[in-house]
Length: 389
Image (cartoon, rainbow, N blue to C red; front, top):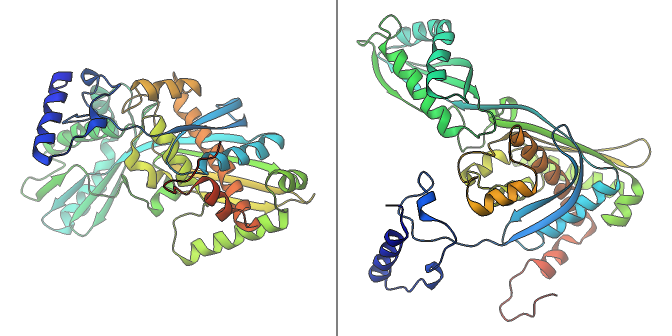
């Protein structure tokens, strides 16, 4: 039940079972009646500190002007570092951003008795794309089926459905659409021989849902976004406290280390930006690691500065649906202008821009020897220590 009285009853019950007082759960700003579809067994809420990073000057396709980014985090030094990187980029003329594409995938699997039946199904199913689009339109007015792509693995066929989903992340939406599309497939006797088909499940794990994968780098799942800037030598020295040569050297060490370690992509710290902004704006936090797969590039310029870019190929985010309707999360989206039509692309560009700024600051701190001292000063939680002003 989604009522305050039901919440308090659950809270009293867990207190009696565990013998813990849970005083911090007594009050919550969330209305239990508005949480249908977001949570079950609701007993309370936890607070995560939100800091403001920026401003960062954007010269993007979907966002222009100075933006402050809300970051929900308990990691000291993160907001300060993102702000330092933002200052450097802004002083250099800002960051250019572009949301290149948006898609969401779901990949059901059909298991047949033998490979020939699977092969026949894979060869014929693509002929029915328009029929499947008709089914999808009956389920959702926001999801558009772009393509279906079969992959035969022995006697199974993994059938990847690719959609566009507007300003929604679209994971639940595309699951429902794919389920109904597959029910239509199963009803077509000329497509699926009931004597040959042994099983069907809605997801066979080839969509990459909530998993980092090479497929995400090459094909994307969510919004593919890229950001770049050019920093002159003077700003690098004055704001980032390093030199272009040291910054480039540090980047090459990080990039080669990522290759040696088998890391997907190569960024210094993009996950921190993705996690902090995802949490602050009501995104699916379980998608942080897949959305953080990216490519940070840094090159020297002919005039002694550096060129830097950040590409995040699969930001699984939305500005409608999920937790984006919750009061605080909605307010923070509004603060960044990320509500209304086209706002998901805007949010993606904001994340990419701040991810680039943070990577520039992080690598600079590492090569200049300030990384540890910054965390000692801002990031370590020493009981009894006097807090900084």
